[in-house]
Image 1 (tube, rainbow, N blue to C red):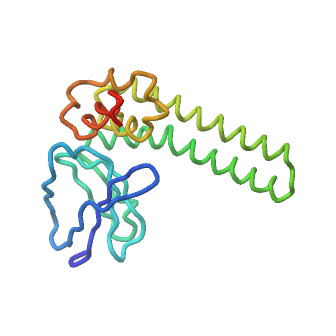
Image 2: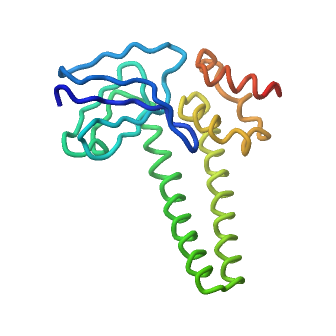
Length: 190
């Protein structure tokens, strides 16, 4: 891995923004980041290495890189990553998988010009999005001290803002940049 470049990207809904580029050269790398930026969800890619790793970067996190496929790397020493994996495996991924099926069904119906069938598949997609929103809201309410909940509230702000979830978050999260951002949004300033 020596000499390869690792790129850390922030993950936002629909786009990624480069945060850090790191030249790998030793067994261990210590990153210094502004305290109000972590924990947060990041994506890591390594040059000449297959896959990408999504993980919550926070103080003390350890990543054991898989040298053939970075997506199989092991992230440890992180409460946020455990919570993220729980959300991803039990809520987000199953929903994404169902949406793929419904979208494919809509595509087949569209190819056959079956208007009623197109409406059926679109209806299933709408119900799935609503179900994901409900399950995400429930996850946040069950994890009010979680940086994962803070992240999820940010990327789902317009769908969830009327539920008063921000006001229920643990004030211990208030030093995080996302908390400050959402506080402004909740005041109607953006």
